[in-house]
Figure 1 (tube, one colour):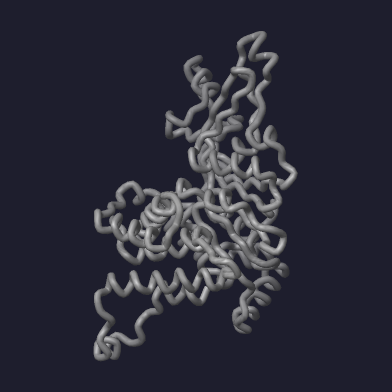
Figure 2 (spheres, rainbow, N blue to C red):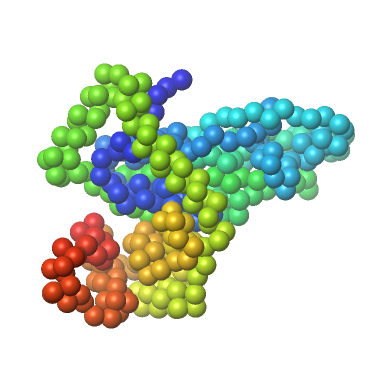
Length: 371
């Protein structure tokens, strides 16, 4: 089995890593789109996230990977076997990582029904597709901008609903398909249509790291990994375990996360002031803020969670004026976030307070401006 480069060993790209971890905590956020130039660790990060996630329990021979501890996830086949007195053996396996090829057809993605047997014998024989294999795992779509628009739309629908429904000739079959959806693309090869772009909950634009010291770290870590992959992974195992445990704890804490009317008003005012169409951005920001609060070990969201979520949910939804590039759009968002941040804090810290506490932390708005 191939050894995967550790997620925690990635250098820089904090925004990308944060978006991936938050989706791992709360897949119902709706996925993340990573846009960046070649060689910026997009594919490496996706594979590393799947390798980082905890193992899952499944029934032996179950292609849909139902959760044995949750009867609501059982397929009809599993229910029939159990009712007949069969006790499927439970086994543990690594979190699935499924790489969707650009040439994938709709039938290959959603699966197919055996119409002949369905009509003649009344048997619902279903040949599972990629979505079944990705259930409770990570579905990665490289070069998503080159995938057929219809297939992309289908993937986003299933990711949002968590259920794959296949209907043919009046016969239908459905199964759970809950996965962390990760799409990556190089904008130089073409962009997604705005309608599809908006369907990705979060989006991150990444560039190659310019800092010489960080680039040296990338070189050193890659050389060390290639020289002895097993030893390199062992060195990073404590950090991998820590992050894995944090994700597991955040998943358990997520249902307890609370929000106030003021939190909702903050989100609504922020999105409305930026002229973002629809209401998807508001919902995504709330979900992402809840996941971030859970990761931080709190039981309620605060303004910083909201701003952090907005940093990931809004850039690809901003309306751009003619001749306005991504950097200018991010600057507009950064200025708006700074205004919101200033309103939340009321007044800036006094100089004597700063001298006692040291240098004030860099604001989220400034991070957005810097990109």
